[in-house]
Image 1: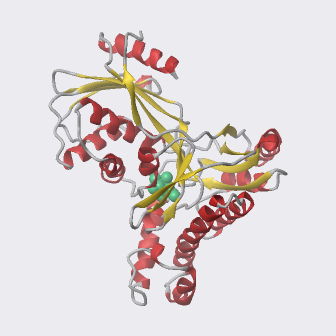
Image 2: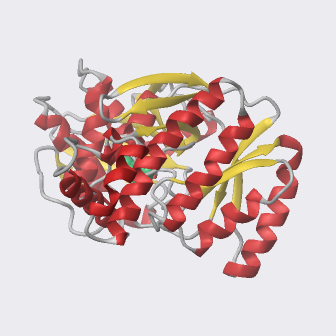
Image 3: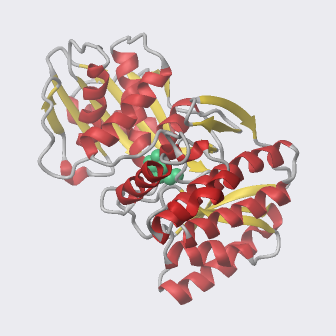
Length: 396
Ligand code: GAF
């Protein structure tokens, strides 16, 4: 970790000719269960991981913002005036930075000066582990520290979501930013996205670990069918409101949904809504199972979640299906499912630690056979949420 900060400090010095003042870290996330429920007022169960975005920064005396990513050296130093709210012309990571600053400003925060920032992320890009929210919350904690903002954490989280919704144009829910903003080591977050009441649940998996399986198929949230799913579930709510007084599908239990499902105007809407309602119920049962140390039941619910995301929500695809369904057959695997938005990205498996090598071999071989290239595997470690790491003390 400190090696990364030493490197970033050196890069900062060579770009800006002085030392940065502060170090920051913001993680990525996995979601254990509760997928595509967050914009449906349902429950989610994500955790922040130790992969993430590192940054070093310093205030400037003028109003320029100058940012540089070692992941995108070809973009060079991106410079803009801190008050300028125009989008950068090309698809640039700088737009996430602008989006968060704009959202924070919308909450009444004032920025007197610009700043310089150098970052490096080790979340594989487009992997569905939320590299974009990781960046958004990094900017949040950078702004909070450099401008001494006395603001609640939820405002940073909401600013990340607003950047994604308003500035980047993807109508995501709150799960990713919440997981990254509120994450804690060895705990997952059980969040009711309707009430925003949450509980930190200790994750004691004994001899089991969570393995992340990366399709290595890049997923582009904005290019995907994510916004279409948001619209479809909103339409289902609208149609069901004739029968039940709901704002969100997450307010329906499965019996009530089944009673009125035939009134939906198409089989597609029925499938989308069924996933949202049943996935929400599965998440509640799964968290109970985990609290009772019933990993077997948790694993079975993971499998059912994947099946529903495949058949009803239709957000998986051959890559994620091959990973999850092959993993489910390996001895020592209790459950496997896609995680995040889908359409590529990553799946996760709950695996006995002695079976990890077997999982990698079996899934790796089958995936190459079906898809034609190799997946990647990482054991997930649950780490802390976005935070200020400390001052830079002559690291270069
Ligand atoms: C993406 C979104 F950003 C989240 O809000 C959530 O909807 C997730 O897809 C699906 O559960 O990560």
